[in-house]
Image 1 (cartoon, rainbow over the protein chains, first blue to last red):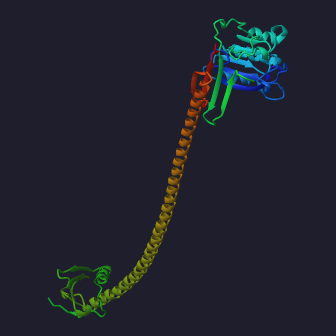
Image 2 (image 1 turned 180 degrees about the vertical axis):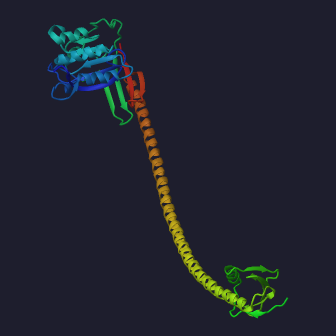
Image 3 (image 1 turned 120 degrees about the vertical axis):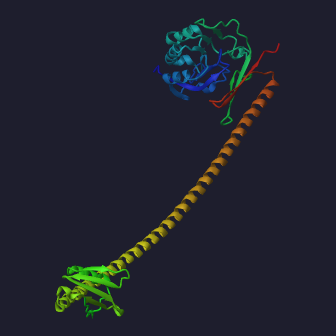
Length: 184
Length: 205
């Protein structure tokens, strides 16, 4: 099914997952099992919830002031058909796409490979705990590549620093913290 | 000119009936200024009527035309008879009028009573309406007070939440700054009802 995506969580607008404010989508399900992963709750593909691709797109286009969408996980390319469908629809709306994958590029083919090719920013490669560097911009470990397959962004001037984002709900007082933690 | 004066056989106290009786029998009455004398002209005989005490009428006539007394007397008897009939009719009319007036009075009283009852009912109904209106107004005032109280509570809660978020934000920024985090952006999204704090920390060499 390429019109349904298993989703772990969503943040409608974040400033730390790519350039500008972005809609951030964590997919549910990952079998790579990287040692030291701090998103282990995204591994089980039976958890999370289903969302229709059109539903996600509709939600994204109604958010004011966002530059694009960032897809991470979980492992997005283990649902590559649906992700490709989503990316095409997002692109048709004039928004940019930042894609995370734990796969190495030479491991990919088909729709998974196409996802990487049409991403405006791609972060690829396993998370290797020993190479972990929390000060790397948008990456977890130094082996992971950061590139712009479409050339939409010039990433050479990207400055590295550690980022955290904290959301405090005015209604419930709930606090949500996202970013790249110091310690796992 | 000679006059003969006689009294009537019946008491004709009702002037209206007497006049009507004379007129009904072809006579004519010329009333004098003092209302005491009537001149009767009938059958070529000029007759004068004089009001006597006790309701009797006397009359005199001029016989120069040769009209005989017996004829006149007979005529006057007819007047008396007619007077009696008219008087009875008048009495009957009066009785009927009395009955009509009595019934009208009764109806009027009944109407007055009904009207009074209606007014009383109306007053009572208005009183009930006023009570209901007052009750509704009291209820409305009470509801408005409750709404005001609820609004005040909501405003107090809203301010309390704002204060909580403000203090929490200040605390987060202050505590993270101790570990080298710097505030990159702080924004408040009114439509989504959240505050966003973006922090950055550079590598320490």
